Image 1 (tube, one colour):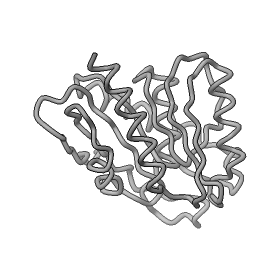
Image 2: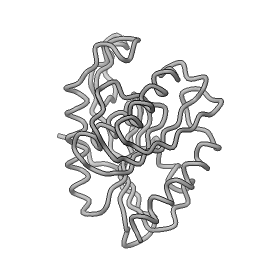
Image 3: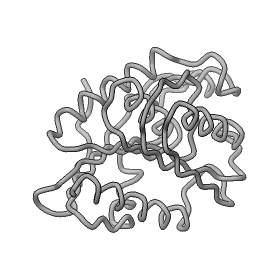
Length: 207
């Protein structure tokens, strides 16, 4: 049984929903502060779900919130395709339940699942993918993606994110790519750039 997600509506009668997926070991509360920081120009329903608690191999089998298992320090090896697909399918169900145009967003593990839900389930054309990677083959698509990464990220190497960006672009996605002098985190400059991109996407949905 999935836990109910956190719901934050910026104003009545939202014109879109944004499903935001947290990273490994966090929960839906992690990105609640970002709702105000984005300063959305139209009413939006932010849906912040909690990943299930499961053993994570790379952390000695310790149970924690995770969208899928990570078995190896090389994030491109021993990929938990089944876990990724299970989470993406659930995100697709959650998106359908909103009965609104949907944007997907995620950080690290959450960003990977957001991309997979868009690429494999057609949930949306708009994806925010922060400090993440995509180790699976990329089908032809027309996604609009905001992708950002820290140049000092030691958890998800910048090279993996760059390769994922290139694969998305080669398959037809329009990727707004940004790097920042930070580790595996989110910085103020990144939020400012995302704010502009996010509101442009909302304008397209609202218009």
